[in-house]
Amino acid sequence: MRSRKSCTITSGEVHAWTLNWLLHAKLVKDHGWRCTAAVVLNIVLRAAARSISVSAACRDLSQGPSDQAVMTALGEGIPKTLSVLERRLNEALTGELPRRLRRRAWQVAIDWHLSPYYGLPMQSRNELYYGKPRQGTKNFHAYATACIVEYGQRYTLALTWIRRHEAKVTVLRRLLARIREIGLKIRRLLLDREFFNVPVVEFLQQEKLRFLMPVVMRGRKPKRRRPPTGLRWIKRQPAGWYSHTMKSGHKEVTLSVCVGYRRHRDRKDRKQVKQKLLFAAWGVKGSPTYIRTLYRTRFGIETSYRQMRQARIYTCTRNPRLRLVFMAMALILRNMWIWIHQTHAAEGVGDSLTLHLERLRFKRMLDWIVHEVLALFHDGSPPCATWDP
Image (cartoon, rainbow, N blue to C red; front, side, top):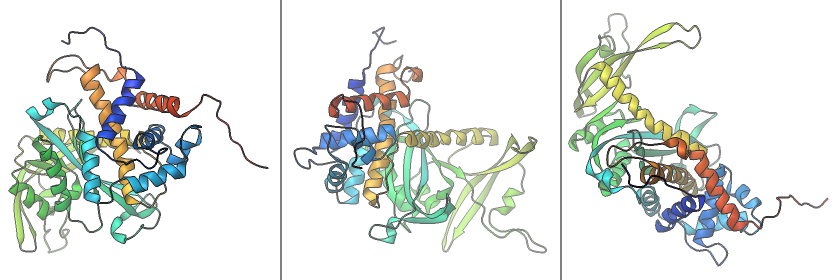
């Protein structure tokens, strides 16, 4: 057990740790004497912690810069080259990862995330990803993230912005390159269904990476005197393992398909329903029940998005680089919350850490950051609104 019997974490320490993470990554440059990098990042932290816009974050800070000054400093201060910007954002995400994470291999989930967008592209249509209608739009800003999905270790390891018509293999290669750059070992990959295609499976087999992902049904449905094609024949099989060869043009890959079942109650009539589940795997073995339970751990990455929405900066900017920064800011705050629990609030040593998430909830940590920023840029007078009649 830890030698100390008590530990105190203050709001000032949490704010200082978070600001230092961002300053060391050199995300923003100084933009004059009033909009230094520290000032701009403090305003952005307040906007993220309150889940409001940058303009709203500046409104009640009597001693802070204007919202236009902050947005100008952000637009001109962040790196112009996308590769440089992504590298610095990823450094901010994983710059303070505990060294013990590199001692063993981890289960890593990779997710394809679509953020609805209702405006026009800033410069080119390639900035947007066009998909099926969702939440009233076909236009999205698309991102991909990689996250450790084991309890208490759910760090977001890498983030990348996806352009229009970008191949899944290209996106996957960028994420894996970042994970290897920080020296993290991968035990297996739990992938989103968006990655189920021949090029991705071929790439992962060449890299000798074990993976598990849901099957996407393709091929002809069974009709009179016409047998089903593709994976549809496996869907009619009982629970178990089956070998299947996928083809795309002149390429073909062989993988294993696990057929399993899931029982749940229908939301309308509350009757029990048995649903068939199909998973594509390579280098992963076990019973259908084990495979279903194993893939359920992938939904830990969905938890990262749920917490990310609690610290999401609202914006109407068309600048895709700023939107990427705002999304990364929420994930950085979430990584900071995990880091604090592991290094200061946990009990035990090494892999036998016992976490106490009730000691500092994520929303409470965000409130502490807001308190510290308010103390820096407000004179203590009551907030008010003034206008001319």
